Image (cartoon, rainbow, N blue to C red; front, side, top):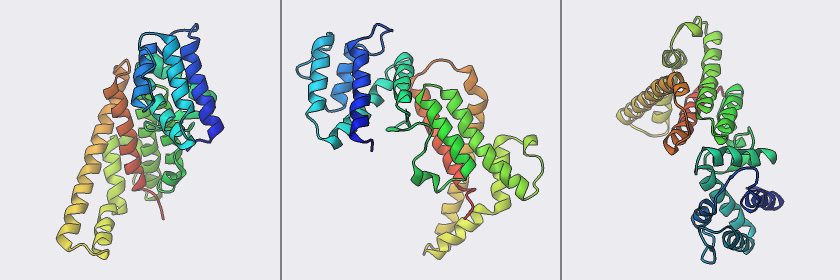
Length: 261
C-alpha cells in the first residue's frame, strides 16, 4: 500500500490534468466522472459534462475518505483512467513514472519492481525482465510487455540449457525449449512425487501433474504466437491489455518452475 503523502500527491497530479488540460486533453470530465463512480466516490454533485462540478465532487469525496479508503479509491481511479484509451494510458503512465511508480494491471506499484513476495518464487534474472514487462504494460506498450515476458522465460531456459549441456537454445523454438528444459529437470515427475508425499493418491497425483504439464505447454505455445505476431498489432484495446497481462502471468508461472531451491 502506498504511503499517505504519495497517495495525496498522485491524486493531486491526476486531478491537475482535469483542472488544467492545456497540454492536451488527458481526461475528459465524463471520463473522470465515470472513473469516480467506479471508485466508489460520491459523484452526485458532479456533472458528467462539466469540469468544475466534476472536479469539486471528486476532490471533496476523496478528501473525506480514510487513508485506507483513499488508497483503494486511487487504485480504482487510476485503473479506470488508464483503461480509457491509448492517450489516457500514456499520459497516466507518465504521471506515475514521475513519482517512480507504475501500474501492474491491478494496482500502483514501484516502477520496474515486482512484489517482493513474488520475486521469492522466481529466478533472479527472470524477475527483472518480468518487472520490465509490467512497466511496459503500464505505459501502454503491449507488444513490448509480451516481448519482455518472453525474454524472462528465455533467460530461465537458457540457464538450464547451459547447466545441463542441452545444446544451443537458439536453434529450437520457444515452446520446444521450455519443454526440453522442463523434461531434462524432470519437473513434472518431481511434482507428482510431491503430490503423493502430501497425501494425494497415485491417480490424482498423476492427473494433476499431467494437467499442469498440458497447461504449461499450452501457455508456451500461446506466448510463442503472441511474441511473433504482436508487433503487427497496433493500438491499445482492452482485450490486448488483458492479453498482455495474462502473458506476463503465464511467463511468471513458467519461470517459477525453473527456480532453484
